[in-house]
Length: 217
Image (cartoon, rainbow, N blue to C red; front, side):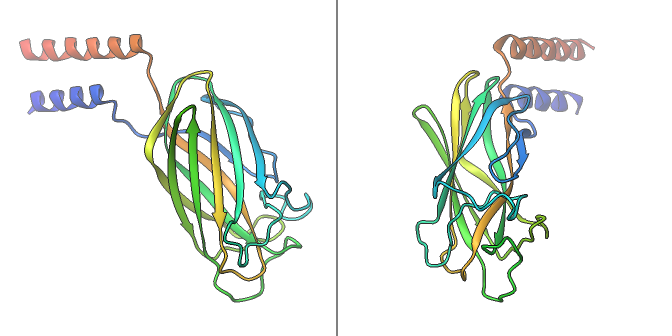
């Protein structure tokens, strides 16, 4: 039984399977975001379409592009840029959505509010996508109530080398809503740090030595 457990541990180690790590997270205050983490730096955000956000005194705890979602089949696009501090593999994300009025207050209408978002992760010639759906969520100026936070995995995990820049582009649509604006409240990127070859080799050697000692015993 012990031998089987040891073999399982060995296979788990060499396969690199482990719990995903939070590589980056931020709350939004319009275009103000956390600039980095232990894994990323130089974080920035650009509003691609439209190029402006709602006034800073409206829904200040959200990033709300100045674009009404009703009957808009193009939606808005926001692009984030990061630089990897070390080799990382990005596999999934969380993204929070909230609807607001043009004055930053809670909606009092009862129309259904739902939408979709496509997230594209790109580095060099490599890219990966994730799709999210979100339902009716509303917001006050202070950012309450709780946003609709959606989790999604990228279709292919993307590895970024230390020093390389990568982008995360979010295209969100909610054309079936009433006259409303859509904001994002938070972002979290998850994945794993890629171990250096020397570190991985030492780990495998140590595990092999442990297996040999148990086998002799």
